[in-house]
Amino acid sequence: MADIKITNLRKNFGPVEVLRDINLDIKSGEFVIFVGPSGCGKSTLLRCISGLESITSGTLEIGGRVVNRVPASKRGIAMVFQSYALYPHMSVRENMAYSMKLRRAPRAEIEARVADAARKLQLEPYLDRYPRELSGGQRQRVAIGRAIVRDPQVFLFDEPLSNLDAALRVATRLEIAKLKEGLPQTTMVYVTHDQVEAMTLADRIVVLNAGRVEQIGTPEELYEHPQSLFVAGFIGSPKMNLLNGPQAEAAGAHTVGIRPEDITLGLGPHQGKVGYVEYLGADTYVFLDIGQGELLTVRQTSRDIPAIGEMVSYDYPAARLHRFDASGVRLA
Image 1 (tube, helix red, strand yellow):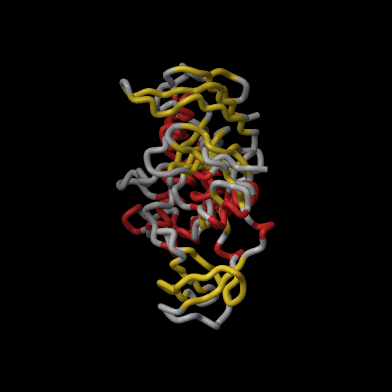
Image 2 (cartoon, rainbow, N blue to C red; image 1 turned 90 degrees about the horizontal axis):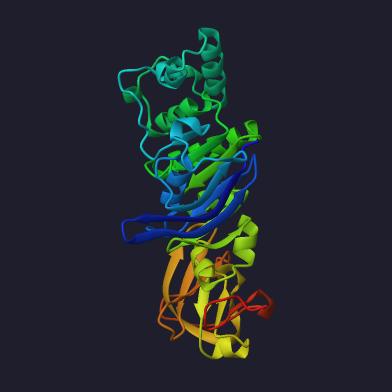
């Protein structure tokens, strides 16, 4: 069992409180992703789980064992960093085998585990190459493979794809998804600022804001039922439109949110002036000036694209509105 239980966890750096009363249960075999803006504490929380940062107060359990004072090397975890941290003078095979050699594992076991990890990550053709001979995506897969051979209870990923270009990021994300399928009993905790990674990989997402947990849920729960204005504005790309004034008052709320894909152009009681258009092929984003400061974003698949400066009508189903009170809390 590799469940993780965090109770009332706090982390201070001197007088600065970085994490505040974090309470979180991660089930064995679950893939949980931490998201949030820069400085929200997501990487610090991951480092507290790993043992690379101490905990100021609270309790951290892994597999039912309190590990507050257990060193990182004894926690049964493996961590994959944003920087690949490969040994440049070692081949891929040697990099992947190194931790097991340090533990004086039998040679046959080392070879079997390296071969298995290389097969899972499609690294078999590169085992005798050196890091300088690999692409960024291949290097990151080697770093993941090095973690796999340790057979950890828990995998921790700290923004592992942020150094890759868009195409490599997609390919490596798919490799991580396949890896999770192949290791169903292994718990994985992943930090990212990329919403696509979070929405496509996670069993559950933890949204952090200013050192606190804003909401925990499946990708669908966070997208369809954000419990605060912060989550509503953070989850989704492009982000949810947040409206005040008459449209919110008509819905009995201080603020209402509406997703760009739920707005229809051409009909309806509301009007706006087209300020900008982004054509992306299958989708087009139309940005309307409705007199509220931020432009209203409309996602449409129609090829009938309005011109910049044109006045257009728009509408949305009342049932698709997300309603929030003056303190930013979701209304029933």
